[in-house]
Length: 420
Image 1 (spheres, rainbow, N blue to C red):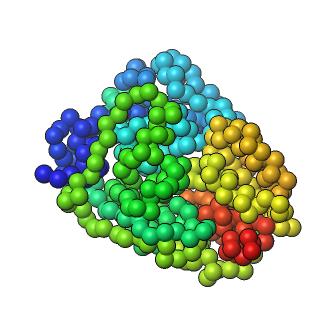
Image 2: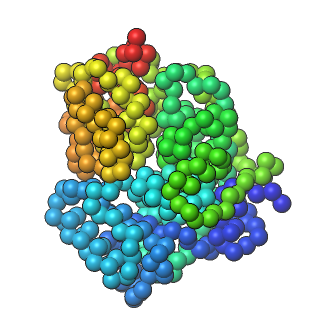
Image 3: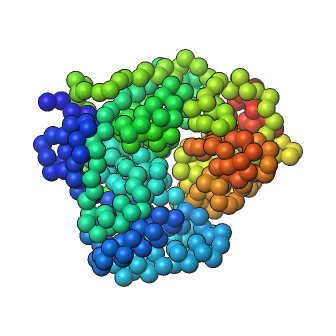
């Protein structure tokens, strides 16, 4: 019988020939992950359960430096304790300095491969679907069990297919692709589903651009988001690892819940208004809204391609008076590459502030929070009330092009209007 991409990955993880949507399965975890907030609780529960040894140190990765430098002693102490645990358990893949965001770091190190089941105690684990992996978020208590046993239980999700067609306009990016999808599905239209992103409009995208799409599957309520492996993905992985992998192909006649078509050439850049990622409209509908801060970066749009796009509009221009431009590279490797290319100097010349790699202000912890009533345009993935500080602040989600245009104009404006 025909199977979807998600069903094929989960069948292998369960040691079965085939699984079907709605089944409860026990699955072997290929890579277990946690971060600076979720690892301490997972380790606490691991010890409370009487566990003494992790299932396999080589299949565990802890990225606990997402909020470096730490904002307070409490977090610093907790991360220090996680480091002790990793040393005791022989977990070599422990990152807690300035390496940055797990969702950009771990794929870039070649740790995530097609066909893998990756469980991470963080909601944006779906990011790994861009390279054909099934990334699923877990709570810290569930992660404690995985650390001890190397397996978990899952309900096999139904699949929604999202097909991207058309030729995007000059300033339409993968961020616009996924925001347009949110406008159709809403924040719960894919609840506990697997979204298969595919179509001819994806083929020209780099893997870094594809990560932006898969990263935001969770914003639609999805269990995960996956994409087929193609030559672009193979080239990306071969530059990072010598490991072998299994490529799963979704059967065209597999049973899916629905198919959604998104014509990316049908409109220009879009933006998500406060206070929901699904509150999506063309940028022209909110043109003229004054902004106090612009954020570019973090795990959704903090890669080199995003910095390059922003600089197309920032280069030779200055950030508008009264506007703060905060740029947060996703990882230290990305920050170094941007520095070598001269991009950081250009950003500083334009008036930007460069954050250390990591979450930055996106999660509302530090390095760029908003005051009462302030307006921010961000390339982040969420804009809920209080997400970045004051609950009365307003966050608009957009691509690096739209964010950069707002930074230099002091208001929401189309990229074309700035570039002309």
